[in-house]
Image 1: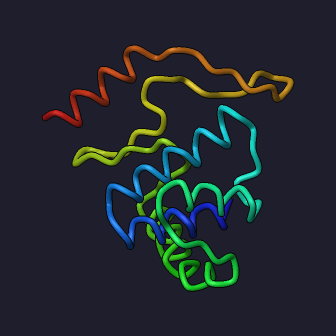
Image 2: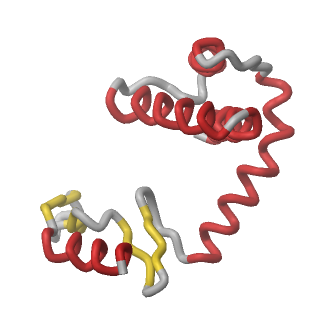
Length: 124
């Protein structure tokens, strides 16, 4: 996903609205459509759709930004996405309880109480 993050970084560098649009499209391609967001053809199509020039070789210039963002996230205790930071603490995926069963299978359940704690912290 690092090439996709580099494209998103380039888009944000161009315009915050373009960065948000590219980020949302990349998430849709990966999560909803199961596309390979590291594929240069996929990334070139996303860039073209948003009026951005894309050169896979030039993506390296944005890798430093991606690496710095990753380091900052680790420093802040981010463990995944979505992870929200508030004055009173961090909330990873606050609307869901995510864990594993004894066999190691992923379990995801709604967590209304966790979401309420997050809203209280975020809106306070």
